[in-house]
Length: 158
Image (tube, rainbow, N blue to C red):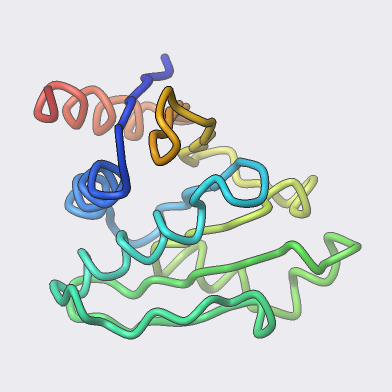
């Protein structure tokens, strides 16, 4: 069962990212869907800073490196940007299987994964909100564990 969370500005996006970061654990895969400029990278940066417990953590975009790895105390986070990939086989070169088992994987442009998309995952679809900085986040859990955590998240965020 998916859940919808509407935020009015960047602060709301960061707050939602922090709430998800608080319940994240090794092996989690979070797929970020949305067009250019919807805030996928901003969400991922806020998520990583929350896991790091450091609002000033340097979080460069993985646009050119394709992956940035953060060896954080609570859990490692791998941030992938697959936009420039043309074949899902290229994903193997990024050691994505290691991330899937040992870290939290934040993946922008997950359509590039194709058949490599894990069954247990959280899909986040971002759409424009009613204000210029507002966003609508549709959280679509795949797997019972994600369903429980998302239900708890939404209850605690209201």
